[in-house]
Figure 1: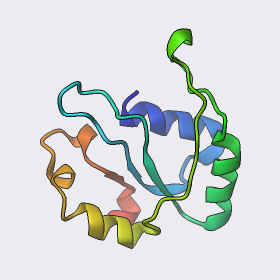
Figure 2: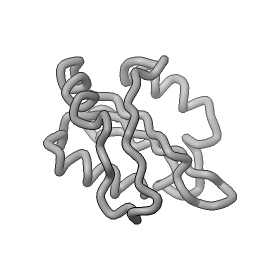
Figure 3: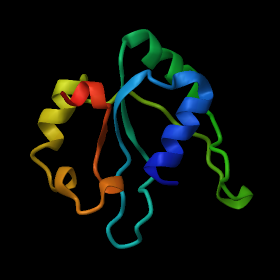
Figure 4: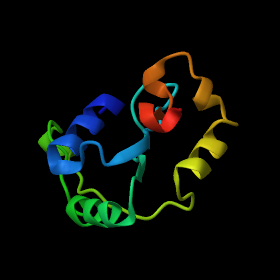
Length: 110
């Protein structure tokens, strides 16, 4: 799974345009995601809706023998500003490949 695929899946589940920050950490050795992501939603209700929809969810396109039900929890960093402040001081914010960096909604990046 890569960042774009995760974003497409969230869009398909009805959350298109509902989040302004997404970071899917990538293992530098394997180039695979590490199994979790950080998503900041535009409002608390949408975040709650996503948590309810995604808890126990099986992501599409995963081989049957590698499928795991999603576990959703609240991150310790809350809000777009807190995420931007934190990640702007890390190496991932300046990763050479855009797909390895946090995604920020264009309107939120201004």
